[in-house]
Length: 251
Image (spheres, rainbow, N blue to C red):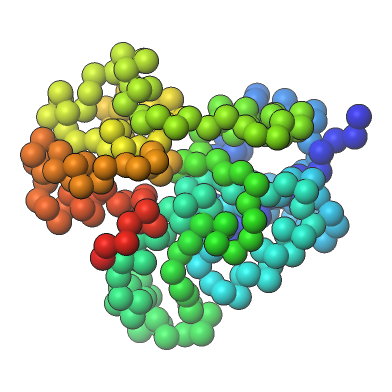
């Protein structure tokens, strides 16, 4: 049986999800028995312009000039998978969508903010530019979810399973004490599960890096952050959109 030809591409991101893959160890090495890596900038210098079976894309779509490259990848790939928060939802990059463009460019680049190569636009998920067949959420993505989804795709599964319940369910399953019981804050009630809730288990509040559940009650979440998390109204709103800025229309 021929191996599945896979390629990894990156756009606006820290490339942390690709780096994380190099730390996967045995599960990823076992996948190599079934896939042929033909492009992966973090681990090899070779590239390809030939057809590929699966294209993994990291990073958000934040420059119109990237559209042509994305369309080329889409045309050559049998399956396109957006992996990581930036590619799946726009991620933390989308925070700039709630700011004045000139302000955030000056904040980041200072006197160089008007240089042509630093031109940018709203940070959007890859699906805003091309058709995406599936997405693997998270910042960084979950190793187990990545391996499971890729395994299903390799075996021809048409629809992969993605949880639709909040992170609170996974905390209860692993008997993690609620962060609010510890006098902390957490976005677990509106955060999309699927990661196994490792952050709250390690005493770290969930930041909803996988996005939000469908019909998430953001207003109530902000009130909880204020009343039980001790945050100001502005801080609660900012915190609730750290990784979910593209889920909101308010500035």
